[in-house]
Amino acid sequence: MHVNFNDREAHAHLPMPIARFREAARKAIYEHATHFNDVKTVYVNDGWLLEKFANGTPDTMANYVRLYNDDVDEMMSVLVPSARYRKAHYAYGKFTVPEPHGLHTDHSAEDPDGAGEPICIARIDTLGTHYVAGDYEAHDPETQSMLKALRYWIAVPEGEPENILDELLKRQTLKTIPVNRVMLMVAGNSSKNSQITQHIAARPPDGGLHSAFFQRQYKLTQK
Image (tube, rainbow, N blue to C red):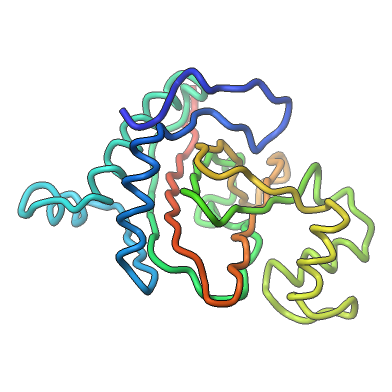
């Protein structure tokens, strides 16, 4: 096991920390990430299992991703019993792109009638992840326009997305998720009943930073 089940915290809203990485795992994952000067993004599917574990020798990151997947599945079976695994990916290496990748609200777009779906993310060392605190629809029109700039990484009347990111962090409209924690969030879709937690990758400084990012997403089954 590479996550600590004793680090759960009770929160009334998402994102919610449900576990932390043990020190040995954190160091090993980060050390492996430093060997790459670009970002490797890998999707977890049947082909991944065959390539990494059935037909080959898994690398360091694949081994820890498999442990992460098993641990998170076990926790989710307790925290959200109706959740079933849907898809996953992970990325690691030197993150150098200055722009975040946009606020997520459409992870579950292929199931618009479903409720918001659980998603577990974790960032190992250095780079954090930002999220919109509270109900993003409750913000005034100006702030919602600024959030749109980050979601699509476009200019809006309020300014360029690079400057808007800094401004929303200064206003604390955007909060920052701590690193080395497994965070339970809600992926977005078109359901009016879902309270979406929007999140955005932190911007690396000039020169970039090495890091690793794990994501595992679930769908909700009817009981």
